[in-house]
Length: 220
Image 1: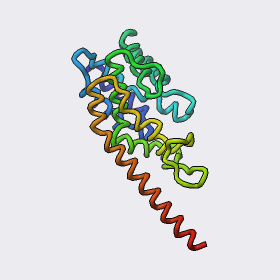
Image 2: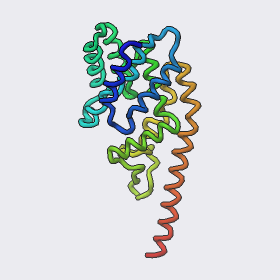
Image 3: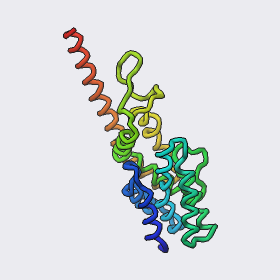
Image 4: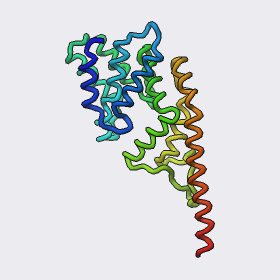
């Protein structure tokens, strides 16, 4: 692929978030190439995978920004700057712009759909739970929050940010959001690992809380 080294070098300059680091980018790229169908443009797909999170530093500095929007503009300007045609640079821009899970602007091209699926696969299974833990720690959010009665919330009925809420809000729902059959297959093979991790963590913290509260009552 032409310009691979230039695009990779630019990506490496932009990736600073531990949950969205260079290894996340490579996992997304490798998964996308696994998913890729015969009619996909692999040069467009590879460039889009490498550049899809380059807007993360701006969003991390200002949470009001959307990294997909920022990154799509950065990707387009960078590719034009190294000699790509407007049409192909715009194709990559559109892939980057539509890769975000919460976006109301769904991917349309086959390359954009593959990027979307590959990125979502990296929030599935055990790796998705691990990355979510890293991100929550980086932004100072807890594993869980408490209900009004002081008991531990499982995250299903609260607006307070936590890992448990992220599981109910996003992580457990990602498995029905895929555009490609291969992407869905990979994600579903990982689903149980995420469910088991969440259930084990919830059971452990609730068990510790109950036993501790019972003993504390006897001490008072």
